Image (cartoon, rainbow, N blue to C red; front, side, top):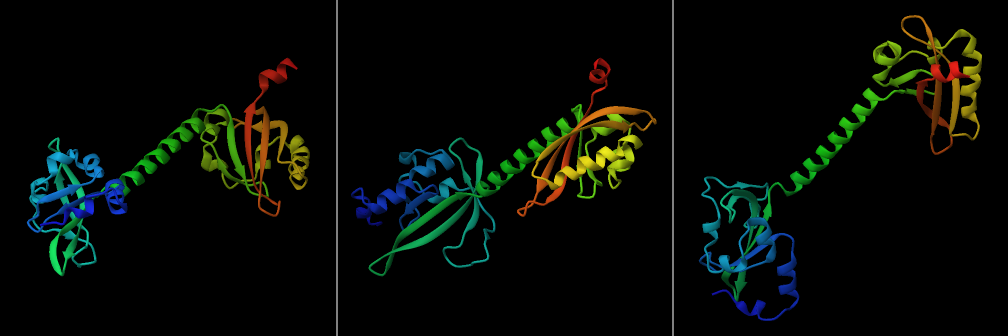
Length: 252
């Protein structure tokens, strides 16, 4: 018979038992449940009263070979399927620790955890990351800006897919080439002066110049650049946002 005096008062053990986030069961030597904590209800849906004096095996699905972890000791985790109160199966990890009284077995302490608890959290983070990536991809594809990243020597390391719709180039036709190759020859000197501003204490600058479309024509573009610096204050890359301003220039 399992000693019930551990639960006779609201002591530290009882508080720990009731509030642990993992499910806990106390069984006697015959496998009958004597106590269950509140976490069991959230995992398997059973009220406390429905479990008392029920056999542990009655809430577990029939199992062939238990899947154990690397540790083959008596308290190693075993993967089993438990039967939810609503009828569906729940994959759980079971850990069994023998309880002894005066040198003799008086029951077991059973820990029950959802197998997919950590995995579901990881999957949720992955889904969130994929969702953010989808949103960013949509923005990059539908934006009316050409978003680009340059190395310190002015070579494209990234350009958004919008470059195809706005300037006619495929991204692979631009990446790896110097930005000056796409600017009007008369604007090159100003462009180099513009790049020289990265050496002073400014994090962003604005440049207006002519950018060559793939069809050979030049379009007037306003480009705002953000300088990304390392801990020493040195520029390590430049992120630029360019948009065509032909209507504004015509108005001017």
